[in-house]
Amino acid sequence: MNTTEIVLPGLVEPDGLQLRDRELPAPQPGQALVRVEASGVSFAEQQMRRGKYYDQPRFPFVPGYDLVGRVEQAGPGADPALVGRRVAAVTKIGGWATAALVDAGDLVPVPDGVDPAEAETVVVNGVTAWQMLHRIARVRPGGTILVLGANGGVGSTLVQLARHAGIRVVGTASPRHHDAVRSLGAEPVSYKDPHVYRQLRDLSPHGYDAVFDHVGGPGIAESWRLVRRGGALVSYGTAATRDDRGSSRLPVLLLFGRLLWWNLTPNGRRAGFYNLWAGRRNKPAHQAKLREDLTKVFALLAAGSLKAQVAARIPLTDAAEAVRLAESGTVAGKVVLIP
Image (tube, rainbow, N blue to C red):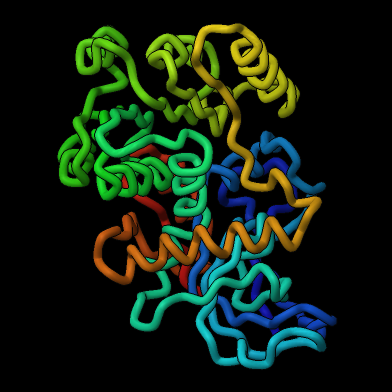
């Protein structure tokens, strides 16, 4: 099968993305050939474009952290019943294409009747939000959490999952997104307010059961101070250093060091960094956990308990426009590429 791909050739502006056509080989043992119906523009790709993602491959490569599509062919050893099924996968790279070869063990069935673009918005975002809330922070019903960037792809999903679980949510966002955040069930606070941390403290005087921080940088210390005794700080990004020059690894390593130090300090609180790929060395177990969690997220989406936050649907060939929009900070939810 031929595929059309978006190639990231190096450190380029969005207009520097390249379009190429090539023929895909037949699926190898354990692989499946997927005709892509939707792929997303996440913060990971924004970082990769700048060479700032922690473990990104060498240029050039095809971005695309996740995808939704239909299986066209199953390779030797892959379940032949997959053929014709709509599936989703977390790929890390390779999703910005019209067709892709994917490890069959990474495929998760998408419920019938769910729109591909809507399903795409909760693949990596849904798994990330579910695992941070239920596997790491383990917040109970009746608790209170703080979500930084509650209008973003992960943030908006996290808000909804928490509200569905009976958890109160306070979320930061630009004032232009407050109505959207409020409609999801969270209490919005402007991150641009000079007294934002005072406001956040006033909304939960005894602290938060969990704080979810994708920003990193100096503000991570303020997030730590907002965690109550028995609570958890879950860091999952370094957006504050997105445009910084220099090493892509140094900000992450500094953040790891700070979180480790706080964790070693006996104060009744926990701090950690969420990594979707942790445990990948035990591949079958990692795949099984991801499949279990994403299946639960898809079930909520199919039932209407989780609303997909599609910021825009843009043709794959207009990937530059999609990247600019995703990086503009003007949209709520996720920008989706449609091959």
